[in-house]
Length: 145
Image (cartoon, rainbow, N blue to C red; front, side):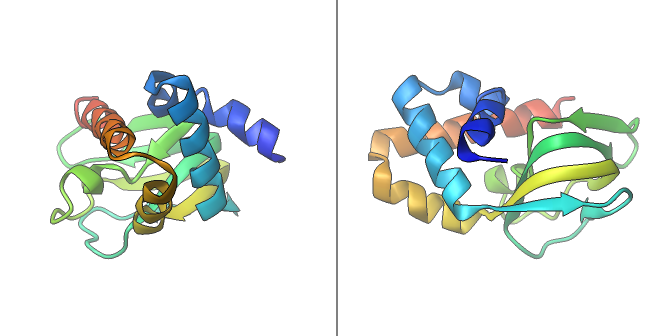
């Protein structure tokens, strides 16, 4: 998948739909630059409930994941979507769900720390705040689903 197609898919994500144009484009560039495209096989676990390790995140580009939370119905998330963002609003907290590939997936895998460090180079403090608030908004929407 080339950069143009990646940006097209990223633009459909809730996070990027809400960011202003120039900030959206610069953030997409940074995310693509710090990410690695991966294929994930059916049944693979991206996150395990209770896992406290790691700062990885994913952009789900193609496919569907199953989200299992304690005492809640099983949910599904379809591409495009941001995964792993809840730890960004509560970094001390363990993973809140087990996320499993339902069929083969195409994802961008990235480190949140690398994303924020790279973004700080090209975004102003105000834009960084907008980005973090956007990520928080996505996280809260996932919590309430």
